[in-house]
Image (cartoon, rainbow, N blue to C red; front, side, top):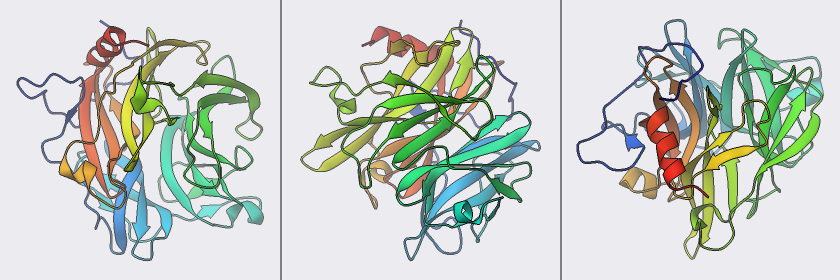
Length: 329
C-alpha cells in the first residue's frame, strides 16, 4: 500500500464507492455542495480552495458576481460540505501599492507551508499572472510580489521546500482562453524571486490520450506519498462544441518533481452529470483542492462544475495510483 506522508484528517468528508462503480473517482451523492448562489451577490461559485482549519475547514472561493466580476471570498465549514461564504471579497495588505491594485482574481489554491496558509491565484496585472499571498486566520491577508510576468495561470505550490527551495507549478498562457499549455515548475529561495524553470508535462498529441491534447494545468496542491508526489490536474480537448475539461493524475519524483514517474492515459473524472455539462461554461470538471487522510489514504477532491457550482468527489491513493499505472502513457 502507498503511504500518504502527511497529517491524519479523520473528520474529512467521505462517502464509500457506490456498489458496482468502476471508475477510480466517485462523486458525492449530494453534489453540488455549493450552488451558484453561495453568497449574497454571487452568480456562480466554483474553482475554489479548501484546507483543514481550527478543527474544521476554511477556504477561498471564486465567486463571480451578478455583474460578472471575478474575485476571492473566504468561507468556513465544520464538515467540509456545508459552507458559509462571506458576502464581501477578501482584501490584501502589502508593501507595494501597485501590486495591490485589483484587476481581477480567480481560481485560488491554498497551501499550508511554514505555518502559514499561502495563497496563489490568477491575478490580473496587465494580463493574467500568478498572485501570491498568505494568511494565518483567513481574515487578514498579505499580498507578496506576483510570481511571474504575464501571462501565466494555474500556480500551485508544493507543501514543503524541496532541496531547500520553494517550488511552484504553473502553466504559461496568453491573454485569452489559451488553446495551448504545458505544466512547468519554478523554484524560489524566498517566495519572491522565481527561477530555475523546468518543464514537467506536455499535452498529448494525436488520439492516444486526446482528452488532454489542447492544454493541461495543475489542480490541487500535490499530495506527498512514499512513492512520489501525486498530482491531480486538468486536461482539455478542443471539440466542435468548444473546450471540454477533464481530470487526470500523475506521479512526480519526490526529489526532482519535474520528472514524471507515471501518468495516466485515461481521465479519472469527466463531465457527465447535468451540473457538470450545463452552466455558464458547459462541460467542465476543474479540480482546485484536495483533502487527504494519511491514516486511511482517503482523498476528497473539490472541483468546479461547468464554471457555475462546486462539486466534491472521492478516491484513495491506492485506487488512483493503480488506475494510472494500468493506463499509463
